[in-house]
Length: 241
Image (cartoon, rainbow, N blue to C red; front, side, top):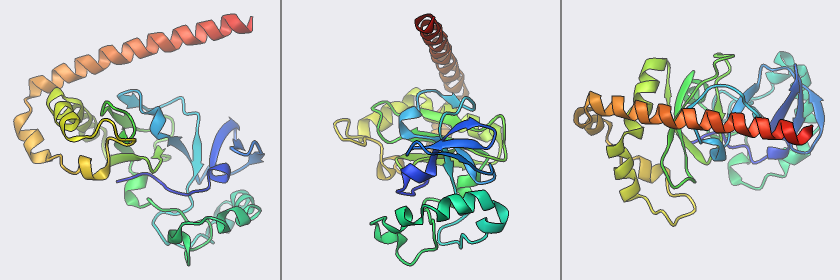
């Protein structure tokens, strides 16, 4: 699946400023209920094999499925409804034909899969096909959403998602994806490329020992990233002082 598509980043994408307080991309500070606000993983942020906390971006998700009526928001989250209504002209000016005749504040790329607790996702843009396990460890009922330049599989339990992440990051799958992708393309990993993966073949041909080796390699890479993040924080603190 691809992630959510709204074509209205200035209104829909937010940064958290405190409890129920947000700032949108237009630099407006707003107070919203958190019922329809979800962590957002942009394609450019797929840099670690496990992403489950320290979110910096959020997105308002108005529907559970495409073409669903959105007037329910008025009773469920009145502040969010007013926020959206006050900016309705921005939504009405969206040029894509997919919004014609659709309910107010419609999105696409939404369905039951969007609300799965666990996702294994990949950025369409990076040269290396790193697959990340995504879940919200702080609020499991508020799963991580991804943008429409990302692709993902959805899962209801951690074990299956974790195993899938290891499988897709194994050296054999990685070599296969590198061999069938166009590395000079703006988006090397498209839905068409990813659909060439045969999970039955992966499961039957990749030994358990290969998954163990992949886990070790990813853990070492993650440890290095954590150390680098600590060093960046230390340097930022020094600069402030």
